[in-house]
Each structure stands twice: as structure tokens, then as C-alpha cells.
Length: 537
Picture 1 (cartoon, rainbow, N blue to C red):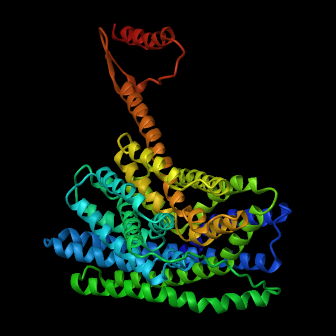
Picture 2 (picture 1 turned 90 degrees about the horizontal axis):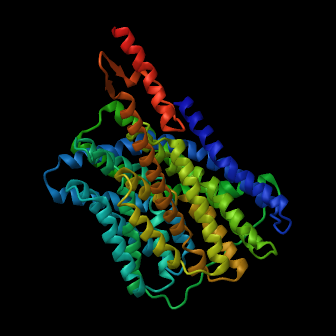
Picture 3 (picture 1 turned 180 degrees about the horizontal axis):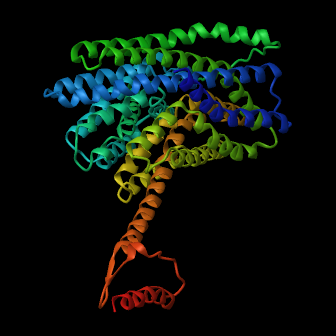
């Protein structure tokens, strides 16, 4: 176990290092950006905690959350009572959403809505749409049909929602699919389709995260129709610079109990549900139970360290860096800086690694982790560049979301079905804790520095981050489909046999070169044909 943990921490180090180096170099090279030495020190300590936390978390997800999700999915398929399926799915959807750290972070940053109100509303929406996702699998409803119906509903009701609620609603849909939810839901989807042997079972194992992320959007829309705050104000971050290393350590130690308690309650709720599930189904043996409980412990430790690192070390730097750069004379650098942040920060999202690993396993290596990492990095780079441009030019968010989602939904008719599910799931996993604890404060700092409206300009970054992978990954699917057809055609050409007068030539034994003219191709074929005839004589 220690060897595996070291490998996980090493992977986390390689993921977090680029974004850490970029921030440090930018704070030195860009003269208008002067980060206090204490803030930089807190950033470095936060990065260290983030790396260790990611290592513990990803190992815990592998040995606890994924087996538990698969087990629940398999047991649900055995149930003959549809109401049992609905109840279990709803309860698990609510509990794992309340446990989601990025949602708790978002709740702290939207004081216009009471935190408990926002969290409960989002959790209820998540529970309802997890039920819809499970029922879709049971009744073999096409994934693209579900997306088109519910996203149509979303954009139809947008004109009736207060403008300040729209970015928060779309952000809620993104942050709910984070490091706890994604491993569990992805594994649950695999478990639900594992017992099926039809040709669509592999395709249907994806798409659960995408469907679940729709629920919070509609739930917050519904909240916006009834909950109308008189004024909307966002509290800005206050900074207490630490001058010495021991002051920095004390700052983190002081914050640790808060995040320990914040993670303890939701993780405890998941553990209680798992114990009840085990008592009812008796699915796991003693050895498996031991591994899962150890995995829970690793997940718990990882999340506490991760949240402490990003909240104490990353949020202040993100906000201060964005504010100083936006108010300087080189604010145009925000767009390329956003592209750079986006390309490298996606690798630091814990759920992205879990998601990409499962894709590689389910597709038997046809869709590799390297391929997915590169595609998601391009999508995130596009999202952050677009977000910075939107804040600078004050572009309404719906001008981006409407055409973006329409284009993504159109692509679903032309892309292999498995890529549609992967793409819409990827939109959820990219908008995790790194987005809500570094990129959102960065956007808020930029908005503050430009004198913009925080609720309509800064919020919405998670929504755009969740949108771009839908397009990029589906375009990857089109390229994959084209290359697969090309390879199949070449394989068919190479395995065909050509009959001649006295014998047969097997194309599988001939190397086929890409030739410049038809005449050259004919000569390449005729030479071995004559040789065969001579041997026959």
C-alpha cells in the first residue's frame, strides 16, 4: 500500500507542479503583480498539502468509492421493485452531493443565498437526476434524447429567472460533480451496465455525471423563482500576511479542524449508508470490507489535506493575483494567462484522473488517459481564455452558453455514442475543487480589478469550464471515428485475397504502401502475381 501511495503522490506532484511554477514565475516576471512574501509562502505550503491530499484521495477512491459504487449499481439491477431503486438512488444522490467539497466552497462564496439553502437545493436536484439517470439505463432511453429534452427545458426557462441566479445555477451544476461524486457515480454506472450483455452496455456506462449535473441547474432556477434577496453583495477576501514560516504553519494548523469537521459529517453519512447497504445485501466479504474501510480513511485524510491546502493557500493567491493583474496596464495578458492556467490546472483536478482511468479501463485501452488528458487540457485552456475575455468585454454569459450547448447537442448526432457520454461526463469532472478554490477567486479578483459585477461577470466560470470539454471531446470522437474507419478499410484491403489463373495471393502477406499514382499501384500488384504463376507452372 505504501508503494502505491508513493506513486499516487508522485502523480499528484507532476500534476500540481506546472500551475505552481506558473504562478510563481508570473508573480516575479510581471512587474505590476507583487504578491507578499508571506502569501507566496502560504501558496507553497498549500501546494504541498494539495499534493499529499490528492495522493491519499485518489488511492482512497480506487479502493473504497469505486467498489462501493459498482456494488450499489449491481445490486440495484437485481431489485424487482422500482420504488426501491428510486429511493436508494435519490438518497445516495443527496448524501454524496452534500459531501462534495467544491459545493461547500461555492456556498461560502455566494452570500446572497444562505449556504444551507443553496446546498440543500442543489443536493435535492442531484438526487432527482441521479434517479433519472438510473431509470434511463433500466429502460434503455437514448442518452442524447435525455440531454436534448432537459437542456431545452433549461434554456426555455432562462428568461424567467433573475439574472444574478443564472451564473450561480450553471456553476452549481459544475461543482456538484467533484472528487467524491464522480468516482461513486461513474462506478455506479459501470455496475448498472455490468450485468447487461447488449451492444449498448458500454456506451450506457457513461453519461451519469452529465445527467446529474443538470439537476442542480434546474433546482437553483426553481429557487430563483421564489427566493428573491433584496440586495446582492459578495464579501471580498481579506488577507492576513504571514511574515515568518512558523506563522504560516500556525495558519494551516488553525484551519485544519474546520475542514476536518466539514469533511467528517458528509463522509460519515456515506459510511453509515454503506454499512446499511452491507447489512441488507451482505455483498462484500470480510477482506473486501477491510479494504473499503481503509479506503474511506485514505479518502477522508486526502480531502481534509486537499481542502486545507487550497482554501488557505490557493484562494488568497488566486484572488490577489487576478485583482492586481486586472487593475494594471497589462490587463490584456489575462487572456493568455487564462489559457495557460486552464491547460495545466485540469491535471490537478482529482476527479479528472479517476475519470480518465475508468475510461481507459472500460474502453480496453482504445481511449487512453494520455488522449483524454490532452483533450481536456485543450478544453480548459479554451474555457479560461474565453472567461477572461468575457470579463474584460462584459459579454453576457448566455451569449456563450446557448450557442455552445446547441453546438454540443448537434454533435451528439454524429459522434460515436460512447464519446457523447464521455464528453458530457468530462464537462462535470473538469469543474472540481481546483476550479472553485483557485479559478473562481481568480475570476472574482479580475472582476474586482476591472470594476465589474461579481454576480454576473465572475460567477459563470465553472459553467464555461464545464461546457468546453463537451465540444472538444466530441470533436476527438469524430477524429477517432474517421481514423477507425480508415484503419478498418486498410485492414479489409490487406486481408482480401486475389484469385488468379493458377493460384491465390493473400494480401495479408503483402506490404501495402501509400503510392502516388494508380500506375505505380498496379505494378506493385502485378510483380508478385507473375511470381505466383511461375511457381505454379
